[in-house]
Image (cartoon, rainbow, N blue to C red):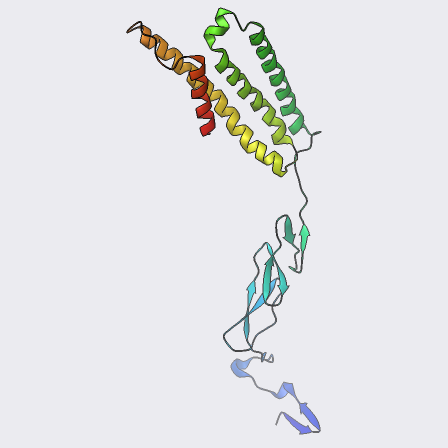
Length: 219
Protein backbone atom coordinates (compact mmCIF):
# COMPACT_ATOMS: atom_id res chain seq x y z
CA UNK A 1 0.00 0.00 0.00
CA UNK A 2 1.48 3.29 -1.10
CA UNK A 3 -1.47 5.60 -0.52
CA UNK A 4 -5.13 6.03 0.19
CA UNK A 5 -8.08 8.05 -0.94
CA UNK A 6 -10.32 9.81 1.52
CA UNK A 7 -11.80 12.99 0.09
CA UNK A 8 -8.43 13.50 -1.61
CA UNK A 9 -5.44 11.47 -2.71
CA UNK A 10 -2.74 10.84 -0.15
CA UNK A 11 0.21 9.08 -1.75
CA UNK A 12 3.61 8.28 -0.31
CA UNK A 13 6.02 8.55 -3.22
CA UNK A 14 8.91 7.20 -1.20
CA UNK A 15 7.10 3.84 -1.11
CA UNK A 16 6.74 3.64 -4.88
CA UNK A 17 9.00 1.28 -6.83
CA UNK A 18 9.86 2.31 -10.40
CA UNK A 19 11.23 0.27 -13.25
CA UNK A 20 15.00 -0.19 -13.63
CA UNK A 21 15.53 0.74 -9.98
CA UNK A 22 15.33 4.50 -10.54
CA UNK A 23 14.48 6.71 -7.58
CA UNK A 24 13.09 9.66 -9.57
CA UNK A 25 9.47 9.91 -10.57
CA UNK A 26 9.28 9.41 -14.36
CA UNK A 27 7.78 12.18 -16.46
CA UNK A 28 4.40 11.25 -17.82
CA UNK A 29 3.95 13.58 -20.78
CA UNK A 30 3.36 13.15 -24.49
CA UNK A 31 5.84 15.94 -25.33
CA UNK A 32 8.02 18.24 -23.28
CA UNK A 33 7.89 22.06 -23.58
CA UNK A 34 10.22 23.45 -26.23
CA UNK A 35 13.32 25.40 -25.31
CA UNK A 36 13.75 29.08 -26.29
CA UNK A 37 14.33 29.49 -30.02
CA UNK A 38 12.41 26.33 -30.90
CA UNK A 39 8.90 25.76 -32.22
CA UNK A 40 6.43 22.88 -32.02
CA UNK A 41 5.83 20.60 -34.98
CA UNK A 42 2.83 18.33 -34.76
CA UNK A 43 3.22 14.63 -35.41
CA UNK A 44 0.25 13.45 -37.41
CA UNK A 45 -3.18 13.82 -35.78
CA UNK A 46 -1.95 13.40 -32.20
CA UNK A 47 -1.56 16.13 -29.63
CA UNK A 48 2.17 15.37 -29.33
CA UNK A 49 4.85 17.40 -31.00
CA UNK A 50 8.59 17.53 -31.65
CA UNK A 51 10.67 20.65 -31.07
CA UNK A 52 12.40 22.14 -34.11
CA UNK A 53 15.17 24.76 -34.05
CA UNK A 54 14.65 28.01 -35.96
CA UNK A 55 17.31 29.08 -38.45
CA UNK A 56 20.02 31.47 -37.25
CA UNK A 57 18.36 34.39 -39.10
CA UNK A 58 14.80 33.58 -37.90
CA UNK A 59 12.84 34.40 -34.76
CA UNK A 60 9.93 32.64 -33.07
CA UNK A 61 6.76 34.28 -34.39
CA UNK A 62 4.49 31.97 -32.40
CA UNK A 63 4.83 28.52 -30.88
CA UNK A 64 4.38 26.89 -34.30
CA UNK A 65 6.08 29.36 -36.70
CA UNK A 66 9.59 30.72 -37.38
CA UNK A 67 9.88 33.93 -39.42
CA UNK A 68 12.78 35.62 -41.19
CA UNK A 69 13.96 38.83 -39.53
CA UNK A 70 14.39 40.47 -42.93
CA UNK A 71 17.26 42.43 -44.48
CA UNK A 72 19.45 44.35 -42.03
CA UNK A 73 18.04 42.65 -38.92
CA UNK A 74 19.14 39.79 -36.66
CA UNK A 75 17.31 37.80 -33.97
CA UNK A 76 17.96 38.24 -30.26
CA UNK A 77 19.53 35.43 -28.24
CA UNK A 78 16.14 34.21 -27.03
CA UNK A 79 14.72 34.33 -30.59
CA UNK A 80 11.76 36.38 -29.35
CA UNK A 81 12.36 39.29 -31.68
CA UNK A 82 14.85 41.02 -33.96
CA UNK A 83 17.07 44.07 -33.74
CA UNK A 84 18.52 46.36 -36.38
CA UNK A 85 22.11 45.57 -37.33
CA UNK A 86 24.48 48.56 -37.19
CA UNK A 87 25.76 49.74 -40.57
CA UNK A 88 29.56 49.77 -40.69
CA UNK A 89 31.46 51.35 -43.57
CA UNK A 90 34.73 53.16 -44.17
CA UNK A 91 34.84 56.67 -42.71
CA UNK A 92 36.35 59.50 -44.69
CA UNK A 93 38.57 60.49 -41.76
CA UNK A 94 40.22 57.06 -41.47
CA UNK A 95 43.62 56.19 -42.91
CA UNK A 96 41.99 53.50 -45.07
CA UNK A 97 40.12 56.28 -46.89
CA UNK A 98 42.64 59.13 -46.78
CA UNK A 99 45.54 57.23 -48.39
CA UNK A 100 43.59 55.94 -51.44
CA UNK A 101 41.88 59.31 -51.82
CA UNK A 102 45.20 61.18 -51.89
CA UNK A 103 46.69 58.74 -54.41
CA UNK A 104 43.57 59.07 -56.59
CA UNK A 105 43.72 62.86 -56.45
CA UNK A 106 47.34 62.79 -57.60
CA UNK A 107 46.39 60.42 -60.41
CA UNK A 108 43.48 62.64 -61.47
CA UNK A 109 45.74 65.71 -61.56
CA UNK A 110 48.37 63.84 -63.61
CA UNK A 111 45.75 62.51 -66.04
CA UNK A 112 44.20 65.95 -66.54
CA UNK A 113 47.67 67.45 -67.05
CA UNK A 114 48.43 64.90 -69.78
CA UNK A 115 45.02 65.59 -71.36
CA UNK A 116 45.68 69.33 -71.40
CA UNK A 117 49.13 68.76 -72.89
CA UNK A 118 47.63 66.51 -75.54
CA UNK A 119 44.97 69.10 -76.38
CA UNK A 120 47.57 71.88 -76.59
CA UNK A 121 49.67 69.87 -79.07
CA UNK A 122 46.75 68.18 -80.80
CA UNK A 123 47.83 69.23 -84.31
CA UNK A 124 51.46 68.17 -84.06
CA UNK A 125 52.65 65.18 -86.13
CA UNK A 126 53.58 63.15 -83.04
CA UNK A 127 50.13 63.46 -81.43
CA UNK A 128 48.31 62.86 -84.70
CA UNK A 129 50.40 59.77 -85.46
CA UNK A 130 49.77 58.35 -81.98
CA UNK A 131 46.02 58.30 -82.56
CA UNK A 132 44.37 61.20 -80.79
CA UNK A 133 40.95 59.62 -80.55
CA UNK A 134 42.17 56.37 -78.97
CA UNK A 135 44.41 58.35 -76.61
CA UNK A 136 41.38 60.33 -75.48
CA UNK A 137 39.49 57.10 -74.79
CA UNK A 138 42.51 55.76 -72.92
CA UNK A 139 42.82 58.88 -70.77
CA UNK A 140 39.07 58.86 -70.09
CA UNK A 141 39.32 55.26 -68.89
CA UNK A 142 42.26 56.10 -66.62
CA UNK A 143 40.39 59.10 -65.23
CA UNK A 144 37.31 57.01 -64.43
CA UNK A 145 39.58 54.43 -62.75
CA UNK A 146 40.80 57.09 -60.35
CA UNK A 147 37.28 58.43 -59.79
CA UNK A 148 36.06 54.93 -58.90
CA UNK A 149 38.10 55.18 -55.70
CA UNK A 150 35.68 57.75 -54.29
CA UNK A 151 32.69 55.57 -55.22
CA UNK A 152 34.25 52.60 -53.43
CA UNK A 153 34.88 54.72 -50.32
CA UNK A 154 31.43 56.34 -50.30
CA UNK A 155 28.59 55.25 -48.03
CA UNK A 156 26.89 52.28 -49.72
CA UNK A 157 23.59 53.19 -51.39
CA UNK A 158 21.73 51.84 -54.37
CA UNK A 159 23.15 54.59 -56.60
CA UNK A 160 26.77 54.19 -55.45
CA UNK A 161 26.61 50.40 -55.81
CA UNK A 162 25.28 50.71 -59.37
CA UNK A 163 27.99 53.22 -60.26
CA UNK A 164 30.67 50.98 -58.72
CA UNK A 165 29.65 48.00 -60.84
CA UNK A 166 29.39 50.18 -63.94
CA UNK A 167 32.49 52.31 -63.39
CA UNK A 168 34.99 49.56 -62.57
CA UNK A 169 34.05 47.41 -65.56
CA UNK A 170 33.77 50.21 -68.11
CA UNK A 171 36.93 52.06 -67.02
CA UNK A 172 39.20 49.05 -67.41
CA UNK A 173 37.45 48.07 -70.63
CA UNK A 174 38.14 51.55 -72.02
CA UNK A 175 41.82 51.34 -71.08
CA UNK A 176 42.41 47.85 -72.43
CA UNK A 177 40.13 48.36 -75.43
CA UNK A 178 42.02 51.48 -76.52
CA UNK A 179 45.41 49.82 -75.97
CA UNK A 180 44.37 46.71 -77.89
CA UNK A 181 42.96 48.71 -80.78
CA UNK A 182 46.01 50.98 -80.92
CA UNK A 183 48.43 48.04 -80.81
CA UNK A 184 46.48 46.15 -83.47
CA UNK A 185 46.49 49.22 -85.74
CA UNK A 186 50.27 49.68 -85.50
CA UNK A 187 50.93 45.97 -86.01
CA UNK A 188 48.72 45.84 -89.11
CA UNK A 189 50.34 48.95 -90.59
CA UNK A 190 53.87 47.57 -90.24
CA UNK A 191 52.81 44.11 -91.39
CA UNK A 192 51.12 45.53 -94.48
CA UNK A 193 54.05 47.83 -95.28
CA UNK A 194 56.44 44.89 -95.38
CA UNK A 195 54.35 43.15 -98.02
CA UNK A 196 52.76 45.83 -100.21
CA UNK A 197 52.09 49.54 -100.50
CA UNK A 198 48.33 49.08 -100.18
CA UNK A 199 46.94 50.78 -97.12
CA UNK A 200 45.24 48.29 -94.76
CA UNK A 201 41.57 48.67 -94.06
CA UNK A 202 39.96 49.96 -90.86
CA UNK A 203 42.87 52.07 -89.65
CA UNK A 204 41.14 55.44 -89.95
CA UNK A 205 40.35 57.31 -86.71
CA UNK A 206 36.62 56.70 -87.10
CA UNK A 207 37.15 52.96 -87.60
CA UNK A 208 39.45 52.76 -84.59
CA UNK A 209 36.94 54.55 -82.38
CA UNK A 210 34.15 52.23 -83.55
CA UNK A 211 36.24 49.12 -82.80
CA UNK A 212 37.18 50.37 -79.33
CA UNK A 213 33.60 51.46 -78.61
CA UNK A 214 32.31 48.04 -79.63
CA UNK A 215 34.63 46.29 -77.15
CA UNK A 216 33.66 48.71 -74.39
CA UNK A 217 29.95 48.27 -75.20
CA UNK A 218 30.34 44.50 -75.01
CA UNK A 219 31.59 44.83 -71.45
